[in-house]
Length: 494
Ligand code: BG6
Image (cartoon, rainbow, N blue to C red):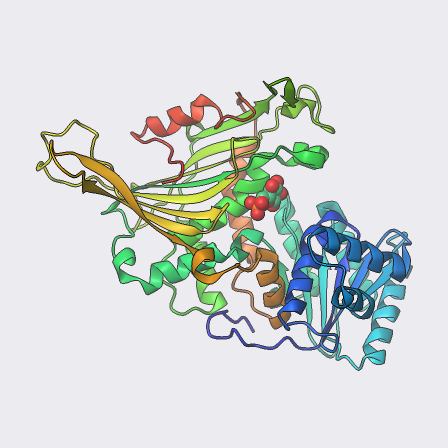
């Protein structure tokens, strides 16, 4: 059964074993363990309802894994107190898969069943595949071989992004998953959907008729989605070289954001209804024209005797790489609501600062009353939804400056989620809890991944023209020219 999140906030987590394959990797330490521990802090996870089993190649043993996890959580800011020690000792288990062959999976199955018996747990299992994409098919086959995907309870499998590297590989992965699992058992993660603001966007749009009634081509002039990062590719050069920004960010995170902004009102807040509306948006997108896409790559930047490396100098990246670290593009959604309203998407690494925002610019006031003012002096109304670094909304409007001569000034009403509600949950915390209670609203369906790949695949074929930009700038000037061609400019902040 697919269920929705709204109105089921108190749904308890049923006793289960949460098995992480690839448990000694970066994702587990940076995201999964902190999210699990926060859920424990909130009383959602307890020893009696959730045991966490790490499984990975290294033979580090249970003690080694617990120590590694303890250190990771301590470094992430938790005090090394009794509660943290007790959680690591009582809730974390480890089983090595040294060769990744069938015998390893049989041994893992025996180990999981033993734990279930010892702790009186039903056969409810989550398998979180925190694995590089190439290792996912073997892991699925291994789990099936050891009959871990069949049980007297429920089984859920979580697949991280990237989900395939093009349409055909995504379809092949879906076919493999569907051989052993039903779609409601498969949780394809896109952590952007777990971000609080993305969920709030639904509430904001559909609970506030003043905005929903303006949310269409009659009043909206353009929509911009910016996901800017100040970091480079860090230690992931080899992965990134194969992926590039289009695969790494646009096909998933930015596309998800776009569909949440553009979707129609669902018939209910059930997962299936919301997923169906998001998918309809994708089906309405026209093929993206090559001339509406700008690819960029960062080059080195020297400042005060300090050098920030260019992409081609990063470890694991060839010196003549043509992989893009920046993409800007225009998407046309050909439906009743949005026809004629460009959606501009852009993302890049090594930009001046981290900023994730959706900027909705409304049309100009259709009046001559201010014609005596300088042309362009009346700013458009804008709604700027910020996801990072802080989460909130700004609604921008024009007011009269006091006194004479008559002049207009731009101001904004701001809403800051943290100021209003305190610390917000992390995306992984929300998503892990949803997996545990069986709620697929914030996950990606098989059809969505394939449809998104179909949209971007043509842009991945053939030679790309790469425009270089210096690290620390807002990307290549060709991206400014792209929006300028349609009479627009990029929004930054409000
Ligand atoms: C990941 C990408 O999915 O998202 C990374 O692989 C990127 O390249 C990251 O840095 C950005 O996530 P966030 O939540 O920090 O915006």
